[in-house]
Length: 270
Image 1: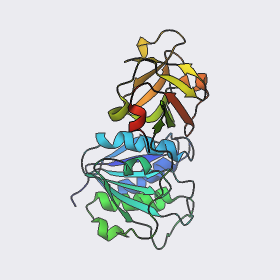
Image 2: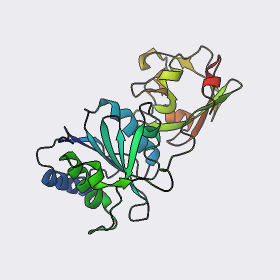
Image 3: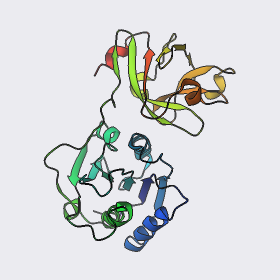
Image 4: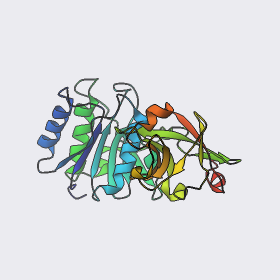
C-alpha cells in the first residue's frame, strides 16, 4: 500500500475534553506528514445510527486511499471486534457495533477484516487513542491490511435492522438517520430511488400531515413542512426558518412512514 493522502476522524468525543487532541497527537507522532481531517466530533454521545450516516454521506467525497478512523463506541472495552473495511478505494477502522451498516450497503461492496488486537496495553476505556489511532497510523503509512488484521470469521459484522426502507400498499416506512443543527430530518430514502417525489406525498407516522415537495428550503412558505432531496444523498423533512424535528417530534433512530403515491413503494419492499 502507498501512504494515505489523509486520515479522516469521526467520533462523539466533543471538543471540551482532551480526547480528540490525544488521539490526534498519537496519529501525528505515528504517521508524520499525513494530513488529518475531522469529519465530526459532535456525533450525539453513543449515537451509532448518526455516526453511520455521517460516515456513509462523507465517504464518497474523500480522496482514494483515505484511512477513516470512526470511533463511536458505547461498548469500548467489551468483546466487540475492531473492523477494518476496504470500501472501494478507501479504508475504514470502526468498532463492530452497527456503525458500518450503511457502508455495507454501498453498491461497490466491501471487504472486511478483523483487526481486533490480542492485547491492549493501555486504558480499557479509550480505544480511540490506544487501539484505533495506532492502527490507523500504521495503515496510513503503507502497511498492508494482512499485517494489521486477519480474515473475518464467525458471525457477520453487526448490521442494524431497519436500514432499508420497506414499502407496500402506498406506504413507505423508513428510519431517521440524523437531525442536523437546523432541525432538518434526514431519512433513509436515498435520492437514487426516491428522488422523484410525487405530488400528494404525505407523512403518515408519527403524525398525519401533507408535505410540500420542494427543491430548496426557500421554496417553503411560513410554517410549511416540506420534503426535498438533500445534499447528503437522502430525502429530508424541513421547515423554512424552523425545526422540522421539533415540529414533528422526530429524533435520530425513530421510525417514520410516508403515504407515497405511485410505484416507489414496491421498489422499497425489503
